[in-house]
Image 1 (cartoon, rainbow, N blue to C red):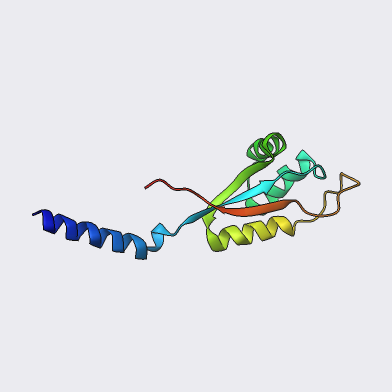
Image 2 (image 1 turned 30 degrees about the vertical axis):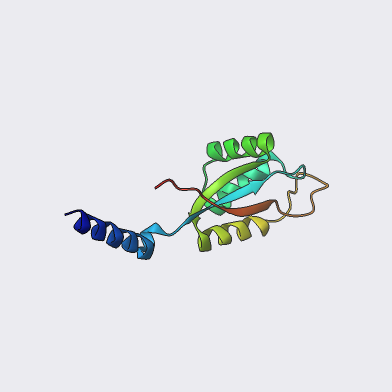
Length: 113
């Protein structure tokens, strides 16, 4: 009986590794700088990712207070695309010294099994 359970556990591990539902997840992390307004952050997150203004305001406050905020968690191709969307969004017209888009990075999400 113990051997049978051991074989079933090995099969489950193989299935988990092959199952696309178990693809690793990644965080899209927005990084703070002094050249973008909270309004810019709220607007950008709303336009790019359909994040409501209230949640966008929470992200703006968090990135300002801690230097970073996780805006999305998804599979790697989508996370890289989201990061590239942030990088391509453009400058904040409200701040004269702003030269371009905000920065973002993609980091592995630690998922407990």
